[in-house]
Image 1 (cartoon, rainbow, N blue to C red):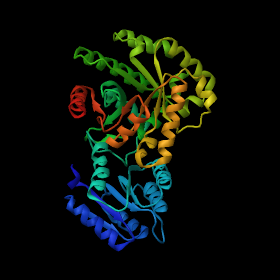
Image 2: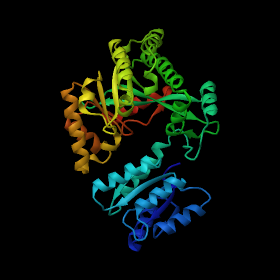
Image 3: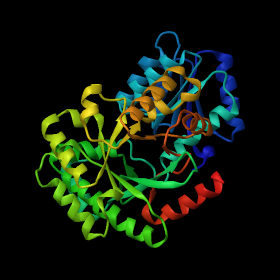
Image 4: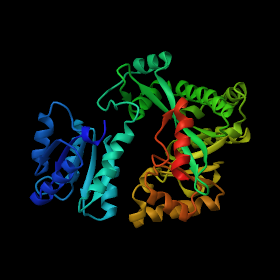
Length: 398
């Protein structure tokens, strides 16, 4: 699509700031521009548009209806594909608003600190392109359990892979397998839409098995091309309930010629704690067999440090919400420093998710993080495109 093809709504109560923003957007080649002076006017415009805009740029401090209330309504009525917050407010408040919007199911591209500049706008708007790479996201779709089951049987749900690079030398050392569902018309169904349906309907074990089997098959092809990578696969808490899970996962790997040392199973922090006794027993068995275990989205759950210290994890993944903007936001930097310190004391490797800028890379390297994952290195790509994505990163890094 390119930036020029985006439809943008700028919501800003200050007339001069609004005119400046529109002029900067036009200078970037954007022509599909809309404007509103407050939240009420913006909602009327959004409800009247035939299609939701790609990006809504919204100020927070507006009279009548502030930006927080406006974002909540936009999320509830699905009036936009994504938002970016434009504000001069304190970073901690901006982060809270971003988390609120994401929790409401709204894609958040990030925050743009006033005053607006062409560089700031380009950086944030480019993220929209990056997030829909490979197909337009079907943001307003709802799927049924039967549709999800049919998608699995028809092979519409496949793993895409996002590389992970070592901070010390930039070498790609692993990939995370991410489930991607492409519809017949080319649109992509977000995992946030179909994964909860599968969990509720008892299909999540089938999805995980598919991701594991296909990841192993791709690993063999990459290995033949000289790529020695570890593969991370997401595991739901529901996958940890059956007594045969560890044996079954091990059998899949043996069938494809992999050892468990090549595979890392990622478990979200909150899901592990929801069924502690059974979950810990299964994690212990998996670890005994040699699987790596990663606590995903660390910092977003509510586990106690004592519980975390008792789980046989080998890796900790810092959630992207703490990484984004960390170079300029002291609170986020403090969270990262605390997570790294904890990981060192527990002898865990650390992967930072959502690394999208050189500044974030440099900060994390300075703080002693082990690995990076994010759009700075590569967007998630189909298995056949991974060698080319790695080569592009090598050329950029060196």
